[in-house]
Length: 96
Image: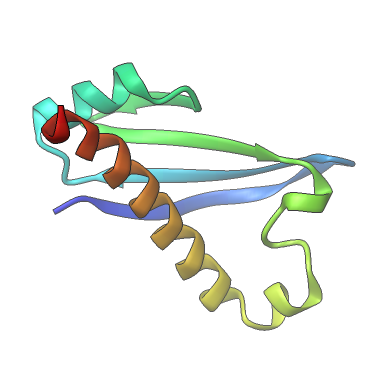
């Protein structure tokens, strides 16, 4: 079963924020398919798909005060959203 975990995040400057997702437990076919079909900045390291998403300040999910207060909730939500996104991409294989 695919596992998505945020392994890094931060701010490099104004409107230059990032989140790094590490996607593990993918079979070889799924890993190859995602590698070829997602447009986001990504690479494969030791059979894990590493995706780096960049955000402006307005859309960075960890920018608000509430995000700092309930960080684990916001982190979990982002991991779930990425899982849903990748599942949707993989679903395209089986629908066609």
